[in-house]
Amino acid sequence: MDCPSEENLIRMKLDGISSIANLNFDIPNRKLTVFHSGEIDQIEKSVIELNLGGKKISTEQTDQTAFKENKNQKKLLWSVLAINFAFFIIEMTTGIISKSMGLVADSLDMLADSFVYGISLFAVGGTVIKKKRIAKLAGYFQITLAIIGFVEVLRRFFGDEKLPDFFTMIVVSIFALIANGICLYILQKSKSKEEAHMKASMIFTSNDVIINLGVIIAGLFVNWLNSSKPDLVIGTIVFTLVIQGAFRILKLSK
Image: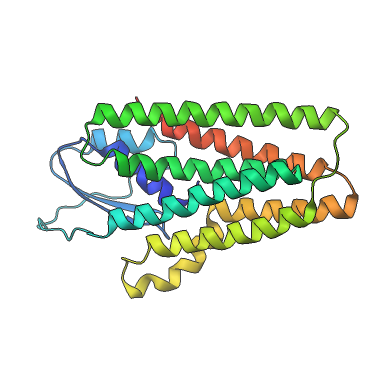
């Protein structure tokens, strides 16, 4: 799951807390500024429950009451949703054809991001209960797919399977890497130009990019060692990350 996805998780988790006036995210530095009235205990507890490593840094008073709304937020969410879901289909299809569990697992990670953006879009204006129901459905569906993936990895590990197509693994992962970079760029378009230099660091520190690089490296090792084991190893790692992301989504339903 990438940093913008985590931002959406936090927004949905804090939705419904009436004391919150505005949320200001600094994704590159992984900081969140919450403008609120009253006590911060409920807000802090909600963020910590997501297990994203959140902790309170400081609290101070402010006279700011007016906040600029991002009118293009919905359009941006639709864009990244479309890119992530398109690559879910591409990687799932090519993963099955090339017999690569790494690509199949990475496709589920793309689907996980699509779930988060989708929940944000389709639940806009809806009740908190509606959002929780959608989050629960998405989380359990994601866990089910990941478990099926784990079972398939075990079957291939102990079975006699043909080698995955390392060339397809590498080429598709390179395109997925580019797609993730585009998504992060799109999500940061509304930020000030002064923060533009931070985009590169965001891209290279996101989980999605690390996963893409992992599949590329696994493809190289498949060819070098003439073994499917590197593909199964990266597949297992990514399926684990997908399940972790699913549990974060499920926390929204509590």
